[in-house]
Length: 309
Image 1 (cartoon, rainbow, N blue to C red):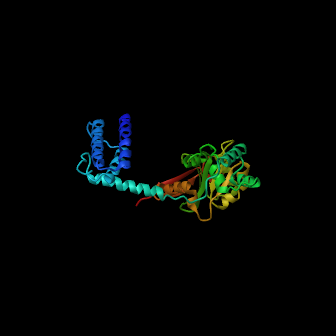
Image 2 (spheres, rainbow, N blue to C red):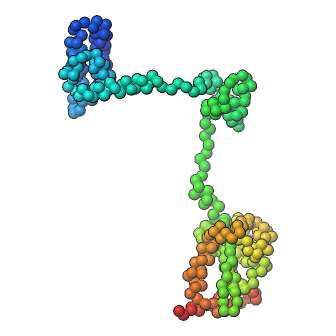
């Protein structure tokens, strides 16, 4: 097909040039013959099942519509309005190309671009400001933006996504908090330590007086030997303030929440809310059963009875 088009164009070039040069009385006849032969060639090359016109065909008929006055009766492939639309589009494309914007800073010379790339490759720590300054020292007038444009892009290792960034330290984060359980004659303070990775309850302890010594001992019981987490999140309760040295001795980094901001320790606060909604609102705590061997201020079991409504 391509060879056929080239042959047609080769046959048409001498005829067109001769018609343009002579413009005699027989020019219209020769143009008609050229148009008819071109249509026959198009039909032969695109016989099944649709007529296919190339850009060269459209250019030829756009020119014939201006050079041949009787081109309409001899046109059978497309409608005359289609040829006129081709001509209008060609005029638009020509003037768009003619009036294209040529403003802006001229491009840097190839030697300067090669020099900037070589400087950036030989000095990986140099940025655009340094290369711009070095070029100015040798008398080359190049802006810093041009130096940044022509510097080669260095391949950087892909950074981890946010999900991975958040999941990396979650296995080393635990949260601790106190909540109050009212009984018949006194208040009980419950310490809950929760692991962030699986929302797992690590340690629970109950006392009626949460002193600093008791809190420090509960932390030792919850994190024996080398099982201490990297981070421990808690609020500004005085019970945690007095055990700062114990936490530091266990090589645990404290993450203290802001004042009156329980949402910053959301996981353990949600656990405490679930305990209150699912258990404490349905039972009445009557007494505290003391575990064998426990101290007078620490208990491990509570005796509750379900309240009747």
